[in-house]
Amino acid sequence: MKVRTRSSAIIGTLCLVASLALTTASADELAAPQQAAKVVLKDVATAKNPSAGAAGPGGTVWIAERAGTVRVLGDQGLGEPVLDISGETTTDGERGLLGIAFDKEFAHFYISFTNLEGTSTVDEFAVQDGKIKPDTRRTVLTQKQPYPNHNGGDIRFGPDGYLYIALGDGGAGGDPHGNGQKLDTLLGKLLRIDPGGGKPYAIPPDNPFVNDPKAKGEIWAYGLRNPWRFSFDAGTGDLLIGDVGQSAWEEIDWAPASSKGGENYGWSQMEGNHPFRDGTEPANHVPPVHEYDRNGLGCSVTGGYVYRGEAIADLKGQYVFSDYCDGTVRALQMENGKVTGVSDLGVNGGEVISFVQDGKGELYVLDLGGRVSRIDPA
Image 1 (cartoon, helix red, strand yellow):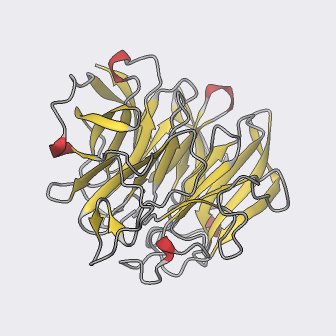
Image 2 (cartoon, rainbow, N blue to C red; image 1 turned 120 degrees about the vertical axis):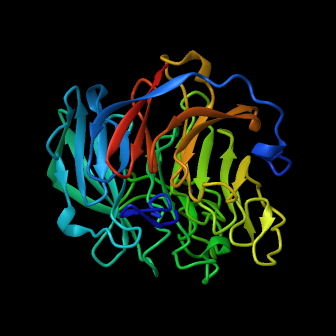
Image 3 (cartoon, helix red, strand yellow; image 1 turned 180 degrees about the vertical axis):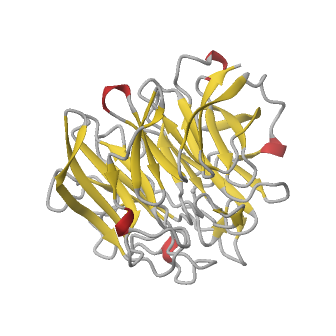
């Protein structure tokens, strides 16, 4: 994600995120979209720089605050912190507590953060009776970061039960080390691991590069600049990634649930559908399903979710996303991995840093400035 300051907040989505024949779409190339769903944003809590969230045990929603605390959303707003690692992270650059996730059984809770040295870290805690057991904490994975930006940091379990981890290209600008296209580094990648299969984890035997001695076996997909937020469609299992652009194009990438991994999304040879700095499009480039330029107010895409809730019938099956600078909540209509329309939902979430999907498929919007709101029917 890209980080700029706006009202003392950080940009860049925390700036701080198919087949080769897949048709790509940008808003100005599409036919008139279907009627936009009518929605409102209902404020449900105020947090201190919320950065991420996850559906928790017992129908709860857990919210991460960038400085290092995790709180549970209730009827009266957010409760007291259930976890506090504020002494172990910093909020300089695009750093901080960047992602949280539960496994499918809510037996383990995972946090993704940058430590005091800026190293990307994923830690695990056992969960019992809906509560974290602090004494069970262990580190699953670490990755040193050469710069304080483009950390990625999103984590979540896929339909296959494996943990997926998004890491940016290492930062600075223009991918100076070429990490996006290198397979011997975890930077600029989406990873897929089995945290319960080994110490500290196991690499799934069907990962695409496990038999390549020159590649990291953890890699699921590559060619990513800063995949700040990604998600799996709860209805189909398809993967969608909001990958923050460099200076001209923001993109959303897609892979079907049937994918065997190994997709190359092009960075840093490509930025969206466009060669970056005279780059050459890789032969195996998987173009985005949607892109938009920086000619408007947008500057840093915030990936969201395909809506699978019950409250808003007209929104079902659409991919909801936003932009950190623009704040407008939008939706993509999709059919078989192709975008058929783009809708402006007519609401603005502020400095939209993340979305959260609860256990019933309803969506929440996190404003880095503190507002936590739910997308409700108008």
